[in-house]
Image 1 (cartoon, rainbow, N blue to C red):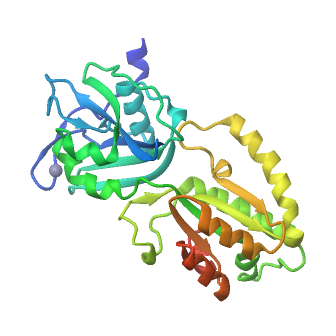
Image 2 (tube, protein in one colour; image 1 turned 120 degrees about the horizontal axis):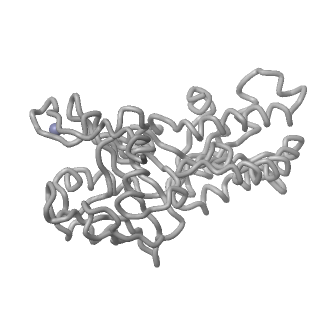
Amino acid sequence: MVGAMVNRDGNGWTTCGRGHRHWGRFGAAGLLAFAPDEGQTCVLLQRRSWWGNYGGAWGPPGGARDSHESVVTAALREAEEECAMPADAVTVAGIYRDDHGGWSYQTVIASAPRPFPVRAVSSETSQASWVAAEDVEAFDLHPGFAEQWPVLRTALQPLEFVVDVANVMGSRPDGWWRDRAGAARRLRDQLAVLAADGVPALPEAMRAPPLERWFPDFVLVVEGAARTIAAAHAAGSRGSERAGVPGSAGGEARVRVVAAPGSGDDTIAELARDLPGRRLVVTADRQLRDRCTAAGASVTGPGWLLGQL
Ligand SMILES: [Zn+2]
């Protein structure tokens, strides 16, 4: 009965453009979950059962993607089937594609606030466990994962876009001067859509690894008349959290609005200094750009962000 409901059409062998044999007729997807743990970054790995392909090797949970599945859906499903990972335990941070020509393996990189309980639940998996990133290379790794690990490792950190709302609004002549709060709301709604869709690349100056897609979290800093949207947004996003989209929190949940108590510039410079991981500040203000760069953040102009919408 259940079998009739599940169409696993991805199961099967295929040959890639480089002449290898691969499992997964429509490509394969894996889930690389990471979480901070006692000052270190840990990743969720599984050990394959001895009887299977690459028996005994370690790697992220993963497998064949079905024709009707998105890569994120497939990766979350595999992690649940193999390691009992609850789909709402992680937030998708990016996708890395290892393209062999005609076949590819896509790794969905996803963050968790802390390691969650895991266990081997599939006959293909003999162990599931959290491993410190610095110890990963000491394990007997699946060769495909071993090859990708140096790149994947550099993607295991939070990514936040800090948006100078007044500056970005001021860069497009959409009548914002007549209704600042309305214009700020429009920008926020567009960024919520962008947060759900992700961006295909980060500005070159960030020297980020070449992922196929990034899913940043957004902090919108508002001041003056636009500040009224902060309270309204907080009420609205509580509602959307209840709706809960597994694994890929809806765009609205990834957008935080901060009302600057004084100067927006001071709040932005503080965020640029204090947020963990990669920070990209979006502003054209020369002096603010210098302060954020000095705080270790990257900066880009409004044109770059608006070009993503
Ligand atoms: Zn291949």
